Length: 134
Image (cartoon, rainbow, N blue to C red; front, side, top):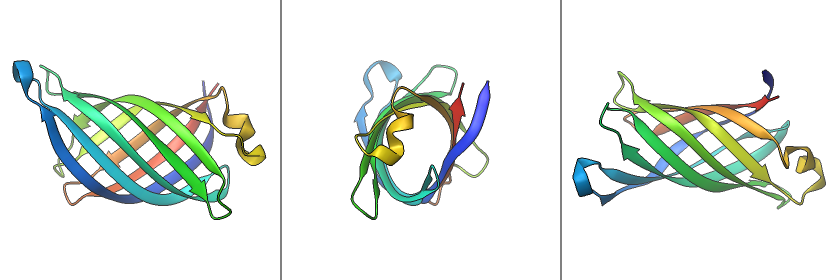
């Protein structure tokens, strides 16, 4: 069941490169950086993910990243999802993310599965929202 909204993010793609084209399945690496909130706390977020173009035109992606508060507390994350190209030339991603943090204010995220909506535009703009999955 979808639970409460845990946070939001907005930012820009900071890098894109092709890792492989073996077997006709392009593998790309994308990086992004942005700002937002997590559990009501302002964060700066950055991450990198690899995506594989599937035969049906969808993308399968896996990534990792780090979020930091202004006080220097960190939250690391790993995620996986499915992407579909959109009319703007970007990709709409939907998937799950898992967090780890030693910071007391984010301890409840340890062992929690969150689901995300993360949308990119051809211009490089990114926006996303995170929800608890109960």
